[in-house]
Length: 235
Image (tube, rainbow, N blue to C red):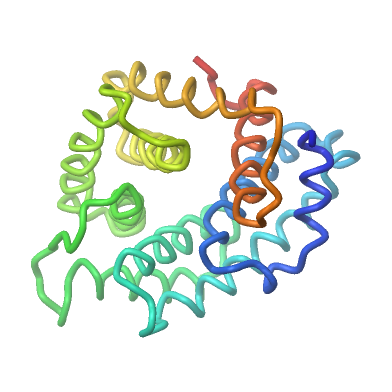
């Protein structure tokens, strides 16, 4: 299945029909596609209008806004959803979504109104959450703690111990850290290694039929097309 066919298949499914665990992959896939179309308007013939893609991102944001305060989900799941909702604001500037996301973020990293920022977990998604908090509030401690997390993740990349999904998650988090915090020069070789690992997935002949795996490959394919067009540096 090529990306065009997979994109059409994914885009025909209502956002509400996807499991919550698929929303992050959907979001980042659509962000890659939106970025391509924004820079290359002729691609609307392939991927639909910027408005249509923007609406898919808005629908994902709506689902995320409901999930961030769901008491039944784990802390790690909540961190993913909050980090993603914060990131949607960069594409879909809705202050209501941003307010919900920032409130949920500070409930995680500053429980019970404490002045101290704490780390309840050290996942790649927590790194993205902290980077967004730094971006929107300018709080230096968030950037410092994000740096601690991303430095801890680096060894997992260099010893090549990541599976397929974690390689993509680490790549998105590390690139987001570099984009927001700006410490990019020392990370080029790490990010290049991750990109090579992720893009090797496209050499696999068959995409599994499960919806979650299709969303995973949707995200990988979108990233590849984004890189191939030169929107971001692929080396």
